[in-house]
Image 1: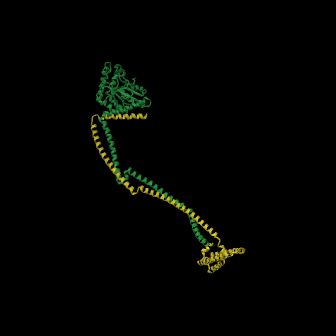
Image 2: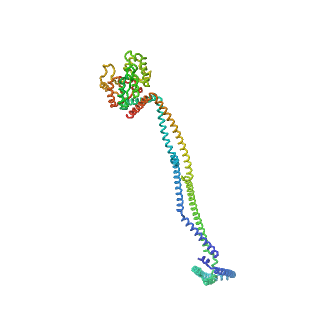
Image 3: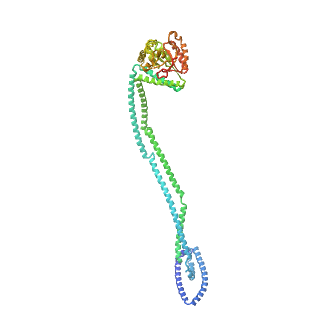
Length: 251
Length: 355
């Protein structure tokens, strides 16, 4: 909360705080010179020590009380800052400054203490940063790996699809290339059939000529004497053979 | 120092906030990564690919079928293809018919150019089938029985009657004529011989003169015997155009071989086979011994059923034989006999014992 307090202070307040801190530094220097002077004598030192011890005890109590007061005041300030961030009155600020001015002499000794809390908080923040950054990067890498993996799979599938579509384009029977192939085949087949028809016509003519020749020859043979006689014997033998074949097959 | 830490911590705090936000955002992004959506996209692409491949296969098959149809039938080649295909089919039918006609004509021409050769070829095929049937009968493989009805000494003045009667009995009733030129005199011997041949009967050799008495022309000597066979052979060839191939001894082989030892050698030398009979109608011989009616001859036929291959001895100069034949053949046919012509390929050659 104290960090936010600093962030929330106005510029004016910051300058006043700076001035107070400078004044605080001068006071510290003066106090150091006074301490040197008091250390010159042992008795003085002891007395001073005892006095200082008493004073220190009472002062410590006082300081503790002051600290508590300070903390309360700071808390009050924080609360005020938190409650009225933007609507803070200048007067209140001045009052606070006055309070601080009064309190600063008490903070002289406290400020000498190292800000452990700040350090711890810093390391804590560093840890958070490193941890979050590390895991963020891990998940970032994982996210991109998944993206890459799916992109690669999608690209591969898409490439296969493109290849399949190319093959389909080649295989499509209605594609211009295949239509051209069929047209070419059609021409070849038609030419082949024309040739076959021509050959058949030629063969038919040759057969006609051969048949006429045989028929003329038959007329000559049939004009020969005894043709009917021989033919009758031949037919009888053929019919007789067929009759016996029937007997053989029937029994 | 305090200020220093304040500033530093402020900065660090801001950075920590950013880092935490970044970390939270990335964790959130990873945890809520749209894997299913990506996988669905990829699956969709793959499905589309598979579908495209299936379409490709179907298209290839379709294309091949179209090409096959074009090759298979010219009617799939458009109007010109239809016209050509029909013309080709018409031509094919005509050419096939003409080829068949020409083949038949060639066969006919070849057959007719050498009619005797063609007839002889057909006779051999017929004779081989008869032989096959005989063997089945001998082996008991069929219930069919064969009757070789033989008639000796023709042609005679009543041979025509026999032929007419046989014609009336059906297309497949054939007999065998053992002819002898001088045995019986008739005015139409040559015509009868040709008719016998043209009717599918077998015409064979029974010697030229058929003079069988001791010192007669047939068995006077081996030379005379041979001459008698050759004279009849020449006459039959001159009249019918075919050489006979079976010889029957006038009076039977027992008598002939007894009178003329070595007669069978002569027959073999002339390329002949010889045959006797196993059923005698006793329709020849001295007039006083001839059966007085067809009934008597028919009674003689009762011995036939004992023979699965019967060889009947008859004569086509005896009218009673004609009468008996008209009755006997139908009866025998009812008993399972078939009447076939006798050829030298028959199993009966030289083996039929005389009854």
